[in-house]
Amino acid sequence: MRAEGLRLPAMDLSTLRAWWWQKQGLDGSLKGADPAAVLERCGWARSVGGVGPYLMFFSRAGVGRERADNAVAGLEIHELPSARGCTYVVPASDFALALQVGRNFAAAPMKQAVKLGVTEKEIDRLCEAVVKALSKGPLEPDEIRKATGSASRSMGPEGVKKGLSTTLPLALGKLQSAGKIRRVPTNGRLDHQRYRYALWRPNPLGPKLAADGASADLAGRYFQWVGPATLAEFQSFSGYGVKAAKAAIEPLGLVPIPGSDRLLLPEDLESFRRFKPPKTPHYALVSGLDSLVLHRRDLGSLLDAGDGKRKVMTEKAMEALGGLSDLPSHAIFDRGRLVGLWEYDIETRSIVWASFGVKDKALTDAVERTEAFVRDDLGDARSFSLDSPKSRASRINTLRTAP
Image 1 (cartoon, rainbow, N blue to C red):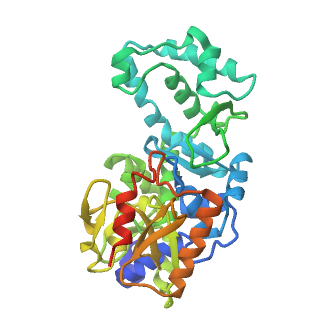
Image 2: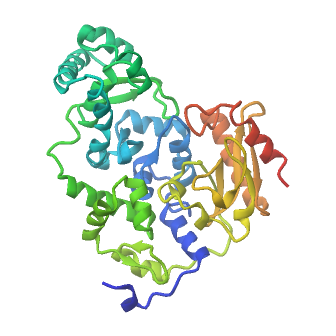
Image 3: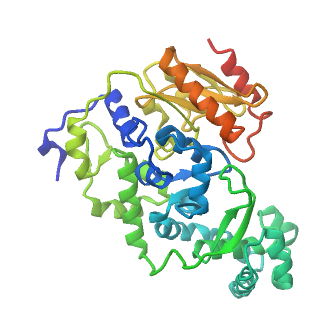
C-alpha cells in the first residue's frame, strides 16, 4: 500500500506534534487508566532510578505513587532489562517480549568477562548456586554473595576497570535476562535503585519466542506508540542495525507520510488523515525521559521555530536547545509542542519553571497539580539515580532567572 494512493495531505509540524501528543495519551484520553494500560498505549517507561515512570502515569492518567507501587507489587508492571539492554518498566503483557529483545544485549558483559578468564561453565555453576540460595526467599546482593560462598569470586583490578568487580553480577544478569529471577525494589519504589532478587515462577518467557518474531513485535509496538517515526528512530530505540531494523518492520506494511521519511502503521492512516489538532491549550508536565521524546530522540520536531535558539543549562554549560537530542530538564508540553522546562527545588518544596513566552491560568494550574504530586507523593523529582539537589542547582538557578 502506498501513501499517494490514499491522497493524504502533507502534515504541518504543529499537526504532527498534536498527533503524537494524543497517541501518547497526553490529551486526557487515559484519565483514570491503570499503569499497565498507560504503558501499553504509550510505550515502555525508561527507568534509571528517577521519577520518569511515576510522572508518566500521573501526567496521563492521574495515577498516584501508591497505585503505581501496588501495580509493581502485584506484577501488573515490572522493571526489566530490554531494548538495547536498557531497563524499562513494562506491562505484564510485554514481559516476555521485553526480555527476549534484550537477551543479546544482556550477553555483552559476559563477552568482556571471557577476556578476563571467566568461563561459561563457571557462571553456570554460579547461576545454580544463586537459584538454590533464592529458593529460601528473596535476598539482597550481599546476602546472595554470602549464601553462594566460593561460587563467586573477585575479578581483581582488571575487572574493576571493566566494571566487573566480581562474577556475581554476571550470574544475576544471565538469570534475569532468562526470566528465572527478577529484581524487586527493597522499598517498593521505582525511583530508588536498591534491590532484592527473587525466583520468578512461572518463568514469563514460557515457550521461546523466535528472535525474528520478537523483533517484528517490538517494531509493531514502537510504531503504535510513536508513529509516524523514521527507520533511524526505530534503530535508536531498538539498538538494531539497518538490516535487522528493515527486517523487523517489513511485516508491518508501513507507509510513508507525504513529504517525509516518517512511517505509519496502515491501520492508523485513516485516523491520521482526519486528525485535527485541538484549538485550546492543554498542558502537561512530564519527565525529561518521557516516551514522547525519548523513544524518537528528535527534540527539534517538538520545537516551534525560534525556540531551538533558546539557551538552556545542560549538565556542563549553556547550549542551544535545538542542538540537543535529549531534554536537559523535565519538560512542559502543550499539544505536543515543548513550551517550557522545570525542575524540583527540594529546599523550597516547589517546582521552578520557565515557559517559552506562554503563561496562562491553565499552565499555572498544571504546574500546581504536578508540584503537589511531587511534594506529597514523591518527595523529589530526580531525573536519574545520581541526580541530586546539588547537581541540578545550576539548572534551577537558570530557570529561576529566565526571562
